[in-house]
Image (cartoon, rainbow, N blue to C red; front, side, top):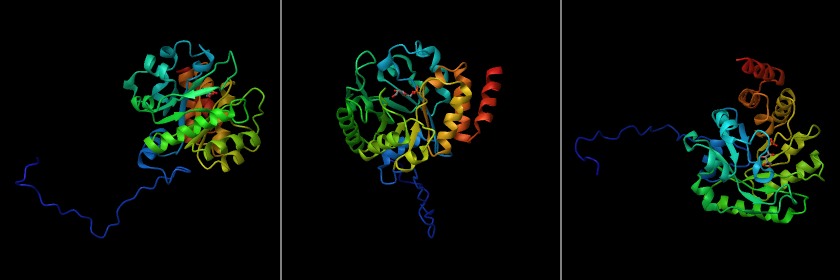
Length: 291
Ligand code: R5P
């Protein structure tokens, strides 16, 4: 028990000063609980409101993807530049040092691989997300695909976990080979995720109408990078997405398959957090490569 003698009298009551209330202004989360806001605040930068998430969960359906053959060699040196990592529990436990203290978006669904039909998935246990101190749980949602119902049920179950344990849900929109990535489809898929309880949504950028996809989604959108592009084009993609209202990227191949991944993630950061133009970011990329 604290010493009862010699204590200084409390006197700094700030009478007449209104209680300070910092507002949490992330789209769609004003009414979320403290824990959800806390975890989202660890993913999204306070100043820019945006995030650079580094995605390297590809192996869970694709096996040893190019650039991820040795996560210890290729991804660990990038951790310091990521606001958040998105990966499987297997990659995390086997390879990511806990001392990196990176906010985690845990790949939370698993099932079929590229060898069969994708997206027939179940969920991990919520205890696993708690054990790993996840800042988000990320199920795949295959709107319009063969396993639409099962994946939307998975998302709904995640939203229930969010309500119970305050771990936000990231709805990851899957795009099947047969589906077109236009604003109509992406807008529908993102909205379905939000309506079913996702706190934020990962989807793809499209050149026409992406601002409508963002406008009609009541929670933040982050974009996946998709297949590897030349570095300058990937930076332009990130720029256009952020200019159209995306709150950042959850990018994989365009970072870890870049000629110089450490330079690339720093250039992506310049676009996402400093709103650098693609040409400026590409110059930065080249300067960092020269270094
Ligand atoms: C998709 O759901 C995968 O799990 C990846 O996380 C996602 O596609 C992002 O990676 P990339 O930027 O390589 O598309």
